[in-house]
Image (cartoon, rainbow, N blue to C red; front, side, top):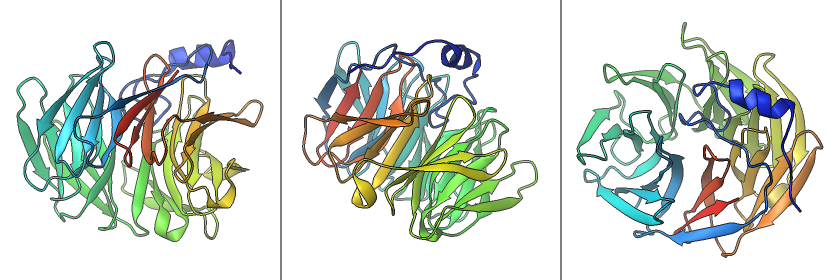
Length: 330
């Protein structure tokens, strides 16, 4: 089975700017395959020590945080080769994003920092969060500033790349996934309290949206039409949120049901939602127009996808944190 993409969705993808693109606000506008054939290719990473959270670079490379190996890895899809850089002791990188200049920014989950890696020189610069803690997931806004969650520390942080200044916003509920809507408001998952949080960067005002008892929202992604898509890890749902109206539009039961553990979510340029259930070795491709799921089976067992992205060509990339394989679906 293949899906075709054409018409209005294509036009919308072309006018979406990089800052407000679909996916997870990672600086590269996600593309859309005209057809999703469902072909899966996996590549063993050099250091399979809880490698996780892939991010695309402006040159098409895929970067990976090797958390337990204390490294950043880069995969060249053309040559199909890897390269790695060592990080300062104890950094334990969790999430990362690559800016337009090819600089890698990562969350130092182990030492309370945001790190800056220049792949050309190998130089690493660390910016310490005022309250330390365990920086988690990081995204980039339309101005190029970085926003990140601090899960155990109960905060959201903002790093201004131009100055290296970090501002913190206190919250609760183990903030996890994070995304920025088309108006520039910062949304994040408060997994421990079954809520989403919202920050107004201009005023610092914080508000919330209840996602229902036992939902445990984990990650979120922005679609080309401005909607937010949220995985509800606790009850097996995929949630569509209208950020401007600040309300839940609808919820969809994921294929594996309430026990599947919906985790990573991203959106391609056609508005198709890619989500996985961590307790299955599948990726679910959701078509909002037809409100249907298509399951794509992965070739490996016990994969453990915790983050995934769509590159500029529309290919879906995932990192198997359990099996040490970088995967691509096209």
